[in-house]
Length: 140
Image (cartoon, rainbow, N blue to C red; front, side, top):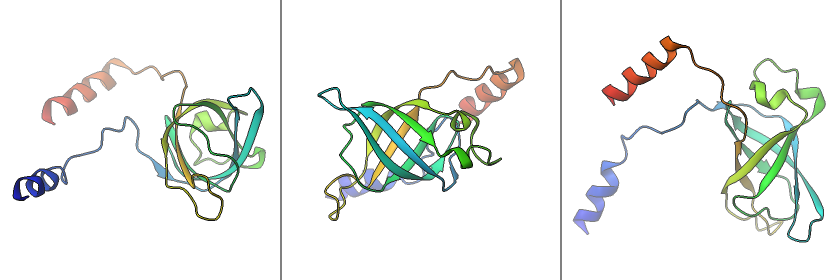
């Protein structure tokens, strides 16, 4: 038992492996996907946080979306001009993959939260950017 506690406690100080920092942002949007039968499904969501490569959304109901399902994420048109919105989310629709399914809501019977990985082309990094990243990796 003591060994297990030490192992868990040893991971507390570990930094996250995110490629981009998530910023809190709350905007309305939709997730559109095809179910197993090929029917188009839509569910309304509200973003909780977002980055250039991912977004966490709170689901307002609808059917459950399976883990690793390819979906299209859309931010409502009026919110796409917000300066604090990451550039990929300003597009009318972003191909994404469901990479995390949160706990189920007792009220709806479907997950209350999803983590989406935005499937966007990576931005080119200058030579100085690579040098900075290598320096961070060397000191980690």
